[in-house]
Amino acid sequence: QVQLVESGGGAVQAGGSLRLSCKASGMILSVFWSDTIGWYRQAPGNERELVASITSGTPTIHQDSVKGRFTISRDNTRRTVYLQMDGLKPEDTAVYYCHSAARQLWGQGTQVTVSS
Image (cartoon, rainbow, N blue to C red):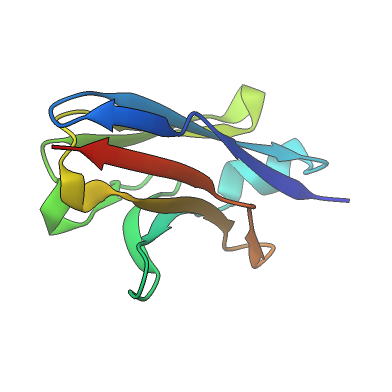
């Protein structure tokens, strides 16, 4: 059974950094290699929004509000996608989810809280 497991969330002060990880377990390497993995976030009362996405061999996509602060990357051999978040702001506070386009699968989410 394929699962996406996020980790790395936590509470930090504004200006701090976190690195989120999304590990795909049970996924064949060739499938993961070609899969588009996205990081999304959802703050209370808001809709879930795309933060960044990555597909092997194509340019990464980052939402305008995080460009220059967040960086998505992947290690296919580890079946893991990362989201490096620097210069965090209180408005980045949300539950962060990763998503597999190939499997239409969501992880359970990890909470990020940024205090001013």
